[in-house]
Image (cartoon, rainbow, N blue to C red; front, side, top):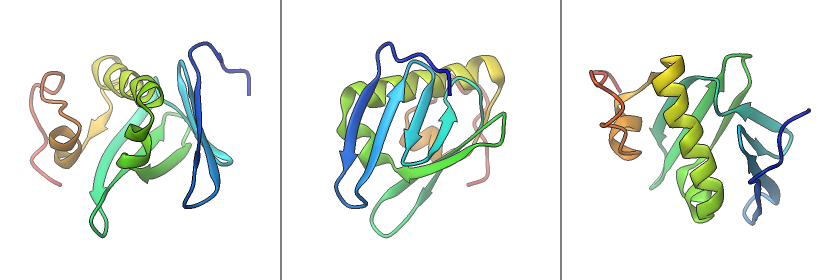
Length: 116
């Protein structure tokens, strides 16, 4: 995986003992990763008392985790959020309404989706 490491951020998810890391254009959780600048779908769902972020990139790579775990590390979240904004603006990624509301994406979504 030849990805840029500039501006990367790394931390351990205590609950699952999985490493989460992000670089300029990628997010990795354990052995799964997505290209955050080439996202095809961005979806927020609800779990038991928490929100989950589900990301799928243009190559079909999928990753999902609790939003809280990403936002726990500000530098990591900034990298992921920038990729999300880029994917919406330039790649016209599909975004569900819950993602628009929970991730405060109203400024980049001109016509918010009506479904979940």
